[in-house]
Image (cartoon, rainbow, N blue to C red; front, top):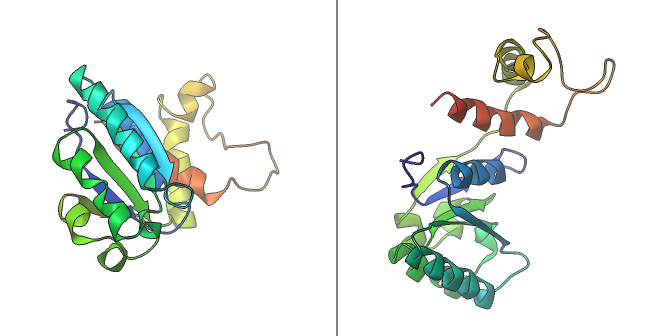
Length: 178
């Protein structure tokens, strides 16, 4: 659906650093859609309304909009209700992220119009597997550095990369072959 320009709304639930924002950007890029991003901590209903207005204008011109709302659980009921016209009219595909359980923190209308995806932190073992696959794949590290196998991220002896690097890479790796 994403590659054909028909992504669907989703709510990404998981701890910080599990690639929620990265996944939203990948969806927007793969769907060739505009990407609007807001953090519910810093904005209100007027900001959401402005995004929806821009998205409606884009839709008239034939281009979709992915609206990424980080920390949707910080919005109250009225603020979450403001999202509905954009989703219901097809102006935006809503991708919302939350670290709070969406069953308690997201009101029913946006929850019922979205696919709920749970994100989890990758274990050290899974990160090592991902690193090895990227090192051996021409689309990964092997292709980026002229085919050197067994390469790792960063200089020798450096501490391992942050855990979120692995989650973003996992999202890219999972979608790259499709």
